[in-house]
Image (cartoon, rainbow, N blue to C red):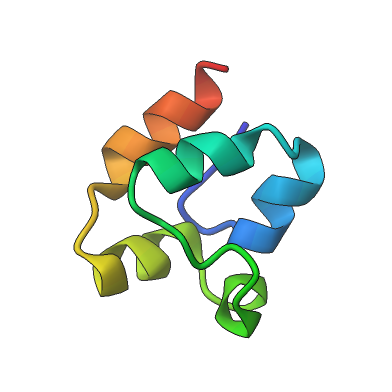
Length: 61
């Protein structure tokens, strides 16, 4: 189960197919060093994205 506290790096290590979902939401920073330290919630806030919608989509794959 993916949570808002997880980092992008953690999510991608769970399933590399999640990259497509992240990018479709506008999160194109998957290789950025920050993706290893920022939580999904923090990254969404920085990019002005809906973290709840993203997490729901990731958990339904």
